[in-house]
Amino acid sequence: MPSVVITGVSTGIGHACAKMLLDKSFRVFGSVRKEADAARLQQEFGEAFTPLIFDVTDAAAVHQAADEVRAALGGEKLAGLVNNAGIAVSGAVVDLSPNDFRRQFEVNVIAPIVATQAFAPLLGTDASLRGAPGRIVMMSSIAGKFGNPLMAAYSASKHALNGLSDGLRRELMLFGIDVVVIMPGAVKTPIWGKAEQEDISKYAGSPFYPALQKIRAMLPQLDASGLPPETIAQHVYDALTSPKPKAHDVITPGPLRFWLSTKLPPRIVDKIVAKRLGLKPRK
Image 1 (tube, rainbow, N blue to C red):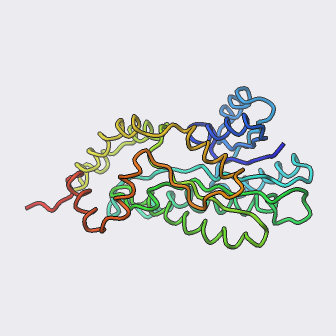
Image 2 (image 1 turned 120 degrees about the horizontal axis):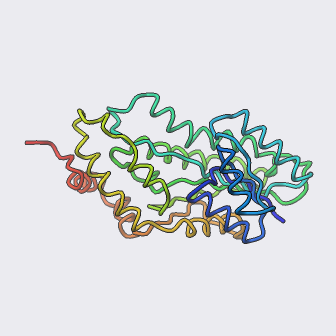
Image 3 (image 1 turned 180 degrees about the horizontal axis):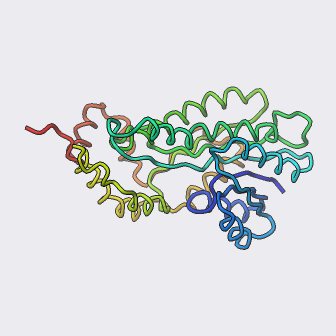
């Protein structure tokens, strides 16, 4: 039975990935931050699921979890690591504090680095273990290809994750460990509900506040038109099992719109986005 570690499995994409991989006869080690979520998922998923309780920003706890997985594998290699956990920090660049950016990068960039370093020996850098080398799946976003206004911190973190993954993939060729980047568009997950609950009143005095309100009003539409998390889970399964997986797997409900946003001249895209969000200069 192949084994995989997935970070952030309490809800959304991580939960869907855990369920699908379990259905495909994988053994899943899934990270959660709360004991209650660990108990709930253990009851839901059964014996083939092992909860790992840690915050992805706690390096010591991540390495301790890697020791637990090593002991459970009994000398076998890990088939995969899915770096899924992430957050989205919203706000204009000129309004966000340096700590806001640090928190965004700590979770979306530094945490995958820590997890990769902790689990790399189990994936195959430790030659004493039995089995084929494993794979690493990085959960990025199409935001890593497109700088969304008022979400620049999130876009920057995903752009950084993409560059990190490409360099890492080329390094780990030495051990036969592949690295696949999944780049979804909008997905039907609790992230939209969490975003709607976020207090944006602290930006009430900002000239960007009206644009933030427009984005808030778009959230129900994004949720309604988003891809089901099971679709992303299928792509993760393919990334872990396909003989020749894509290095960059873009999954979006509006492929033409995504293509236009990345192929049109940037100044044209600027005007389209500015008009939509009311970011044109006032006359």
